[in-house]
Length: 536
Image 1 (tube, rainbow, N blue to C red):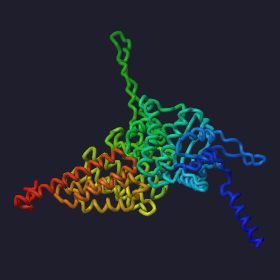
Image 2 (image 1 turned 180 degrees about the vertical axis):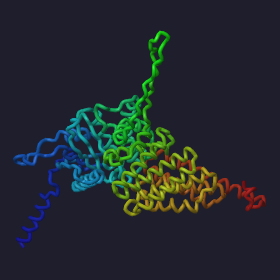
Image 3 (image 1 turned 90 degrees about the vertical axis):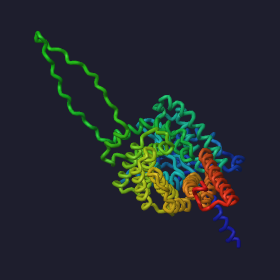
Image 4 (image 1 turned 90 degrees about the horizontal axis):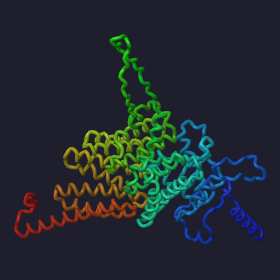
């Protein structure tokens, strides 16, 4: 019996002292009293310099970059940090750098999960600039909706610049939105992210591009703005596009083919009366700067679009899409269509995953439909619908439910838009099953905004056709749909969308009440209840 208890003691001791990671974990925030209240987000910070394998006594050198990140994020509320004493880098021998970056991100996230971390900040020193390259990975960012942005790199030049610390807080605030559940908690995190973005927006509108701190400030700001757009707030779309524009133009210019201008013939000089030559008239040459759309058109070798460039272009084009949907007209629809076509072609030639291609095609269709709606071009909208059908054929609905849901929603929305432009009745028999399939696939708790947006569109179809056909059943479905979309928008923290859903509910309620009143009057006066002319 004594041998049994001694064996149990050895097992317990091994469980206590065992460690699955190759490095040590040191908690840097929180104490015993603070640990009682579980934080909303527990994030890990990995090493940014490669430890010396020949270090004597197992003593690892200090890591000032991870220390700086820990100090910058220590005062963020509802979050806690731990140190992951490991160094990560993508496989430089991989055939496709994009796939290598994805594998590295997933590997880092798996190491973070071993210590119950929800997100991991990791990266490497950049000896060329004297700064560092930062990556952020979490469960939300590994979703198929963010697959193209997974290699997104935030490059900073000066580690001690105050803008760098502010950019890091933006990234963590975006992660807190991903982790929040419920309307009140989500609204709180949205307001905090908005506060961080406000500090940069005014400077961006004055023309600042944060060259001193580095490109990472611009990409972090744009990423925070993108996260807000998916809660219904597109306030920062235009400023995010403005601050990214120089980096996008630089990326496209480096990947495009340089067009050599033909040599200009030398102008002849006419001789005067006495044989002297007269001076030719000086004409001011106006150098026309190429538009961003033209830079996209000059790219023919898609292998020059590396992983970082692809992620940056996907972020930029995603913001253009949201600006088109919100009718901000911050950038042209042709620009978004050109970038998404280029990215889809890039992943096709590099044998990218079907999810990458499907997401690029889905966003291409989204840009086409939004541009076609604005220009009332039914042909372009129908082309977008065909692209949505292509994307649906590539998506596994079980493995990538959110992507399947937004693609199905986009297909149904494109059919509705084409019908409105062509001034014909909305084919509800064709559209309603597609909306319902998207609602069935998408989880209301995990993706409340996507679910609410889909339900709102379905309720709008019911309201339009129910009003046209004087169908009380469809109007009742519309009223119920607006009510459910309102609740979903509240959970998502989308106040503007919730107000629109509330307005739709009131409108459906009023129409039903008016129809009931007319029916009661006609029954009281002995009118023909089947005559729609009398009812109108």
